[in-house]
Image (tube, rainbow, N blue to C red; front, side):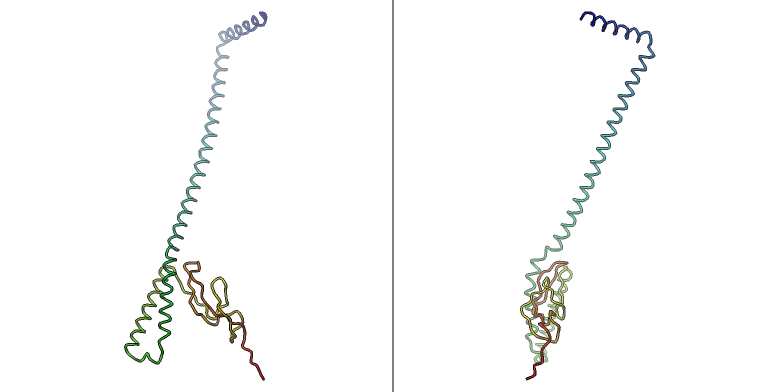
Length: 198
């Protein structure tokens, strides 16, 4: 063991002597090591910078998506916020329609009655205009093909129209933006009237 220790000590002394005798070699070794260390640090920093940039870009994209989603939800909430209120007002419009249709046409020559009818029609028209300003629209069903998504059939009857066509509209249907607020209550044709000969 003493031989091995002596040998190690001799090797150390030789390398120290070598360094002292050849200072250029020692400085080259040290500068090469310092360049390697600097390059390693630079490459590590570049990797960390790239990771930070990727993370930042991902977070920016996520924030943008979140902002867009929030904006869309806000618009939809605003668009459909009046749904319940509008639905409740539909009964008022139905009552106006019934009131107007219940007045006999031959009695409208009376000036007072005529003015009452004109007033009711003006109020009804104004309600529909307010509905439309807020995205609530009536849709026509008469002579249209029956669509179970927007129509509620209460009965069928024979008519001159082909089967599946709406022949009578008992209650108007309404949409709020692109959603159904209330289906139209309709009577659907069951087909052509058969002329029976006895």
